[in-house]
Amino acid sequence: MTESTDSLLAQLVARVMTLRGGMLVTAESCSGGGLAFLLTSIPGSSAWFERGFITYSNESKQELLGVPANLLFNYGAVSEQAAAAMATGAIVNSHAAVSVAITGIAGPDGATQDKPVGTVCLAWSIRNGETRTTRVVFDGDRQKIREQAILMALQGLLDLLESEKLKVES
Image (cartoon, rainbow, N blue to C red; front, side, top):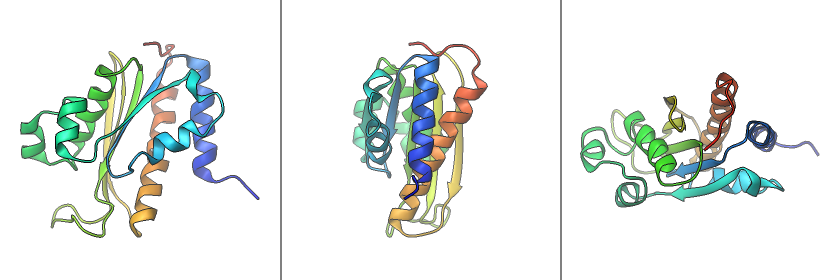
């Protein structure tokens, strides 16, 4: 039996975080904690995984991560702006140096004309550094959309950590 791609990517994130130092925080909406679950399934993850926020409602995004209500009103919870605010808020409200945020519409309901089912926005941030965002539309059912979002979150973490040559410390 071969290991899944998400498991292999999670193990790479674990190695890079261990080598670079610093802690990681997640802020998840449509993935419902799936990313945090995957990362904390790795033995020794307590050395680099600080905490995870599952902020499914707009209220929880505001209360736990400090996402501004006017941002959610103007752009929606499924937007690059909301994902960036979630990633930044996760760092501000933790001791982590690196964050990743996922927000989207996994379906089967919740779609709009400009945000179909499968729309996912992700953000990655480094404390006192760069924040990156992206918006994608994944195909598949609810589970497949969530799995693809987690894979993209992991790959984006690896890309961000690779581009940051300085040691990541909180």
